[in-house]
Image 1 (cartoon, rainbow, N blue to C red):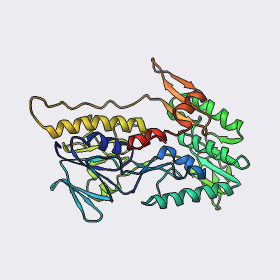
Image 2: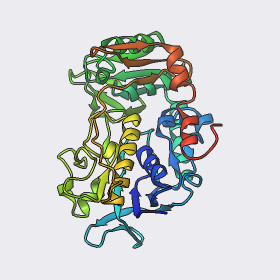
Image 3: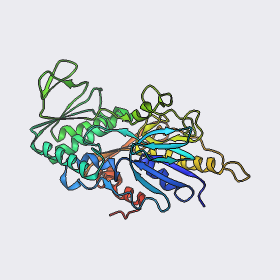
Image 4: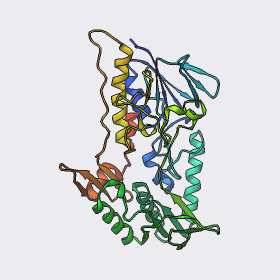
Length: 368
């Protein structure tokens, strides 16, 4: 027995988790513009190493047993008719709709185009550029910038690699000075030029970059790991700008409903529930939203479930790989402090496989 129609817009980490959780109790339709799940955690290595080119792509065909996956682009949520309108003109009726369109990441951690073939070509392009570069500049010293710098250094030991960060310490978003120092030590011991307090902008000449102090860096290839942008422009264009905060995130209450809309939810990077935009937070939100959607669909009655309230994830382990055989893990401990664990823990938890076996199982495949 299925309790109603649920349309999930976006097939990223939060979207696939939510769709799978509701598959047995609702008529689920997952809509995504891509023809395959994109395991973004593996994308930085895939953009550097050819042997990883296929790893980030996991088919959707085993995700749902009762529901379906529609490849298409949502352009509007018709709240009057309670339908999701696709660019093709198709309309998908809903009792509950979930916005899970995530955020746009800088290259190479981006699914370029709409097909696996187009995305693989983009990875191959980056791989060729990195293989031929004499000097690669990475801008941004957060987890992605540090990880990408390490991947490039290990793949190109003969090239110059510079990591420029606007802040005074690497990994400052983790709240751990020790983690930043350890990352810097690893990078500098592998001949990566780490420049702190260096806000970079393109210089006047092609291939040059200027920091806030007027210093110049010449590099024939650059990557900007300086943050993400929520994928909500389509909502603004469709007349739902009042659902968004100034940063473009979907405003939600503590049950993860869009403000004032009992049948519209938003999960993952796209919403304003937490500033910590990491995969564990998206998965936790999907689980809570699944519970609340089931409660909503079943309505009143003696067995009605009460909605749960989301508690933002403020402290969670953060793993930063330094290639497949090293890394660090920032682990919160009681009292508000953090511990920094070394290579063995980081390799087993993430660095070696980049959580690919785990995500394959999430989509119904074997770990291999």
